[in-house]
Length: 144
Image 1: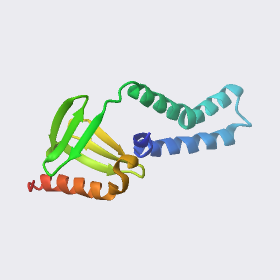
Image 2: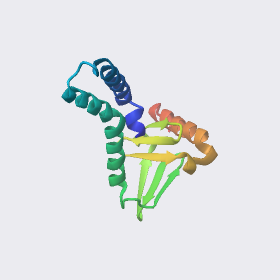
Image 3: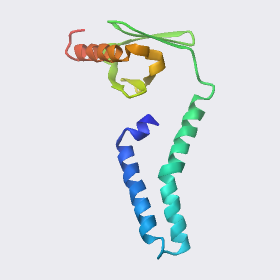
Image 4: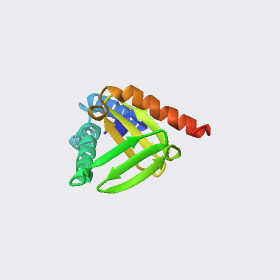
């Protein structure tokens, strides 16, 4: 949901919602019943149907797929342990870190990512984001 509402998709959604509401108000009195139904459906598409679809899809993806995950961030990189399997990622494999109000998203080069909630980071959120950004910047500058 964060991705859907914090990207260009959010701008398109807002424009479509405003347009649908304006059309609905403007054309309600003069339009035939089938067109009224279409306008209501169009408005519901962005305000009800799309958010519910995203929520159900996310819930289905997570169903039964919650392995114990341990992330350890060091000067060398990230140590990842999940379901008894262990991986090491260097800082050059981290594309970006994005701070949102309730989460921090860590984007990896292989298309994977990690979402860290505020409850996981506690009061270390700012320091964590600064640490990761410094490591990414240093790696890109060749100073690992």
